[in-house]
Structures are given as structure tokens and as C-alpha cells.
Length: 150
Image 1: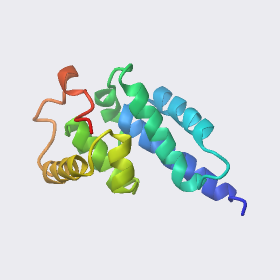
Image 2: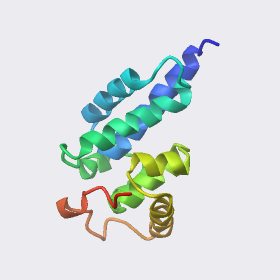
Image 3: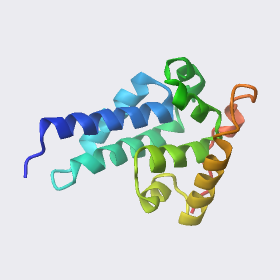
């Protein structure tokens, strides 16, 4: 069954938002979406898989790109600004699972975590989120590495 223009538009919007929240850069987010589109196969559920494919690109490319999340703080709506102050792995877990509804198994795989590590990191994000803010320094370069491996 053909996908509607509205569904495509929503999938692109979700993919771009996810990539921006993970990179803090419009240029990097747009590039990730383009690569995500290229990674979606005709047999895939585009509405679900575009965000996943885009996030996979972001995670792979993030190692070579500087974290620009602090720069993004000024353009984010107030309800998202606290995310910037979370440490990277819990922030990624929160963004993927809570904001974009990616399954725990897919989140863990994308982030190269075990399910248990993913669940612990998500719980950390949920506990920290109400308490973090600008009075605490944002994560620096030493905290940008992607978490534990499987």
C-alpha cells in the first residue's frame, strides 16, 4: 500500500528532529536524514524505519563530529533544554525511547548497549531530568564517548 504524503512528511520531520536533538547541528541532522533515506529499503515500514536509519547514521558519524549540543541550546524550545544537561548515553536513551518511541531492543542495538545497560541509562535520564539545569556545567569533551559496548 502506498504511503501518504502526510506520513512521509511526518516521518521526515521526526527523523530530522531526532537527528538534531542528537547532534545539535542542522547541517549534520540534514545529512543524517539524507543517509537515512538512502538506507530505507522499499520493503521497510518507512514511517518507523526512517527515524531508526537516521539515528543509526548519527551514532556512526558522531564519533568523527564534535558535539554541538550546547550550541543548539538557544534554538531548542524550553521543554527540551534540560536534555542538553544530561550525560550523553542517558540523553540518547531518553531521546530514542521516550521522544521517538523506538523499541528498547532497537535502542540498545543502535547505541551498542545491552538491554540492561539501556534500561539503566534510561532510568538515569528519567531520574536526572527534573534536577539538571544550567547551574551544572554541560558535559565536556571527555564525556562525549558513546557508553558501554555489548
